[in-house]
Length: 403
Image (cartoon, rainbow, N blue to C red; front, side, top):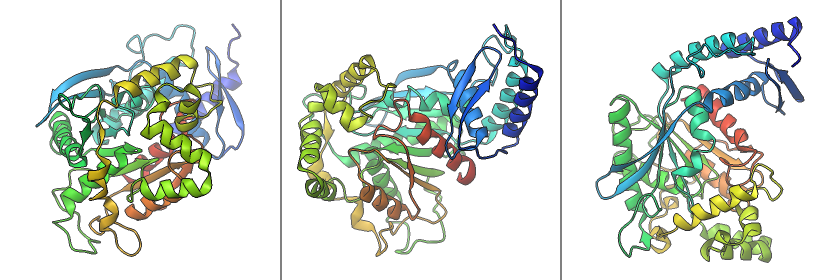
């Protein structure tokens, strides 16, 4: 094996120091970063090089973290959850496994320093999935990645999935039932992390509507119509992030736009989702949720996901009930929720290749929170596949800058 040169060692130290002080510089190139064991190819268009370095080192650390799956009793259901906690920041071998890597000691030192700080001042993250999914969708990448950055990570399987049974013969779940389970789970996290801890809610697709209804339930009766100055003490979250979220007006207006845009695309969405054909049709599943040519989703992965889709559609959201209480009913003339405080940090991420939620829908969600949307190179399932880091990186920057 070729040993690293003195020049590469010096470059590594300098870049590591840049990362540890949150500095960086823009490089719109493909960068090959050499470590003692291998060279890692990191594509970082329009990203700081320090972020690319962070991805490389965090991935190595994240692979050593444990994601725990357990059942907890909420008020009305036994819920499946996943938990991934930051470790003490040391790499495998308790920090002594340097082996053939001459940079391991430096990397361990930097990770220990960064994680020891993060563990004292970072909020827990609560991940909420969308339709056809459950807590598993966050476990492949996001939970271990953010835990490696020092964030305690939790994911809830909503009522009606295979992990959180809705009840014998139950085929439809009301949105307020999801809100109730979410409220119970937030209490569970605060008891686990300390009552002063207020989690950041991170939702994907239909999970975004559950978060909107949670905020509405807790704030609508407590704030004035413009609600621009003071956040009530009752709000037990420290921020909200919506990823490829269904907009406040629900699926209705988007469906009409799909019909105008393409009858073929509209039919794919209708058969794939409403008729659940994506569970058995591999090509359609790829089109709806993933990049068609994404090598990051192997045929084996796709079949695994389809198996989850079948399990996690035992009971689905009651759309007729939801239509009577859509979040769009409580917005002002600018499309912003009338009850949301300006102090609530909010992030809205859209995917450039999203087959399910269009740009207009993303803009509507952004107006609801009173922010500008961020678009990343990704398909609808932003947390899976080879492009998962694009959304994670945008979320990371927001957490560091705003929360």
